[in-house]
Image (tube, rainbow, N blue to C red; front, side, top):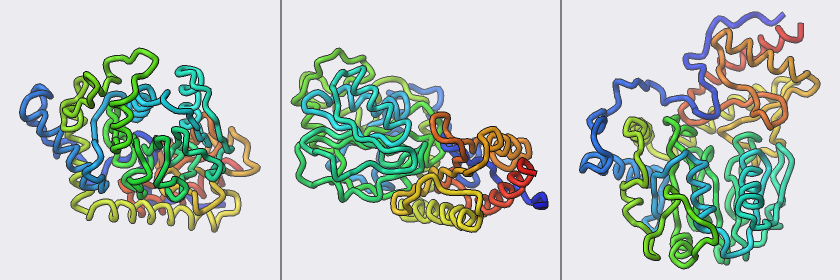
Length: 373
């Protein structure tokens, strides 16, 4: 019988969103001077611009690209991009997990664009060579609910007619982005840097700006989606004048995470931490016969949202493992996404410590032994 571990992870937060706070985080460390002030005050706008400037620095976003803080998390940012820019060209949508499937639904049923849809089952990547880049192309850079990411951006031609729209909410700050290959990129704070929910980031390349200024959608746009005024991009959005009222507390929390990332050494340090976490979990998978990666190909396997399956174990037993670990305070929120195959989903992003991943694996062994005894 597997002995019950005696050491708990110091932080048992392995949820894939909202994700773990940075090591050493506490609310007392947040700058609260902007709280109770207007987000349109000099201080409010300065703090929002500081968040944008730090984002550019850490992610290496070129000066040619605009960065805006927008409403409604990654979903709001991606919807904003779709509703304001699609319709000028045919659309190709890639889907290999639930969020990509959501963009297919919006393009087909809400915007009625009759998209070309290229799919793959959970754990696999679609045929990227089949994409027609005379079309606008929708894809997820990292499939949060399948653990499958695009291995690189080489499949996107530098000279393309359509725009590329990357939902990168569980990829940024842990994986490289080729900014020459991405026209629109979105993410939310509560993923890789463990920020608070409710806000999204929209990054626009020059070709996306050109589309916004030359294309008028065939459908009405809600106020929170409007990026253009009198035929020109509303540039103020991209220097900190948000469309609607943001939570300045959430902004300060995001700034705190960005400053932590900067103190470590920026993007390279964040990637190294995520890679170390994913490697520690993979070492356990390789040594454990009853566990497998949902993503079979290591080249396209996520280093953040690592999805595991337990072949031969009934779904209720898998859920029992998740519940048992939460009861023991060894792991919170590690069940597979509701639309994904039954299994485990363990966040390995940079805000997680590798020692906690290692400690978790011992608890996983114990919990499996308990439910299969």
